[in-house]
Amino acid sequence: MPRDPKITPITRHEPRTFYATRVTRTQAGESWDLWSVEDGRRIGFLSVVDDGHVVYALATVKRGTSHEEVADLVEGFFTPSSTDAHNREIIISDYDEEPEMLESDIRQS
Image (tube, rainbow, N blue to C red; front, side, top):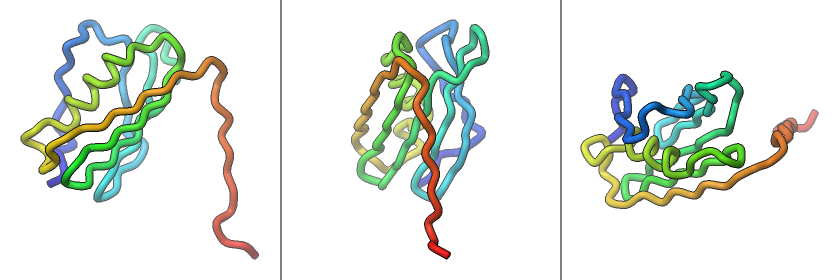
């Protein structure tokens, strides 16, 4: 059961140090950019897949970003009433330098 996109997650971290904007949404997953409240810079991304049994979340954030706050955000997005999943698996990694974006063509000419 997909969550209602109008639900604003309630966080235990007040004031928040970052906020999320959704980049894309599919039937089973969502991707979010994470932004610093202090200076508006991008501090990471969050990708979440809900397969109905487990909510899998993978975040990559700038070193120093609270992992607890990221986990709290995932818990707010995917509450027990918004998913059939019984478990959450959250993996959070840090980076020091801005990650490089690599793009390639899927189809060859």
